[in-house]
Image (cartoon, rainbow, N blue to C red; front, side):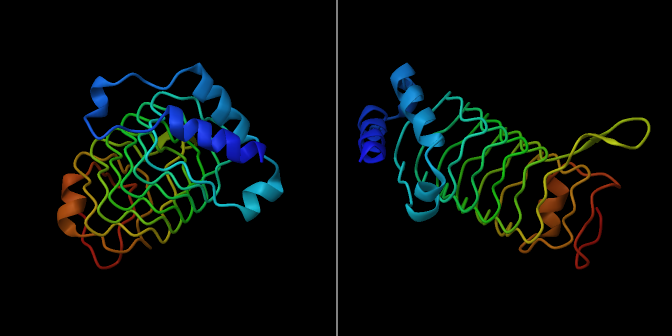
Length: 209
């Protein structure tokens, strides 16, 4: 009951208008407080209920280390939000907007990110195993790893094992150190538009540009 009240409050106080949201105010401290409570909801609620936070304006919020497994964020704007270490397994970001957000070391395994605007996001170290990235925009996003002089990773690359990148836009996407050997839907044109180096592992069907 309490969770449903919080969910309704968030949606009513952060609903996206039909007009351009760039001119509207961002969600206030009350929405941040309410969503922080939802992020700590008990395990049995996370496992049995698909929380819906679709069509919401959640820009600029701190959602780091939150638990939003299987939550529906479709058509929601989470731009400039912090989702570092967030648990987002199986979550839906279908046609959502997350530009300039931080997903470093977040778990997005199995997430649906169809058509999402992920331009300029930070996804270093993120778990994107089996993620559905079809038609999404990853322009200027950073998924790459950085190594120290001794060869150890300072920043780990994202894990894209089994991810679907069909028709994803990868203009200037940093993929240094990323293993792309098991992704599907990747084309030579996408690879040429991205930033790669010798540490990027390509699928067997593609030749390194």
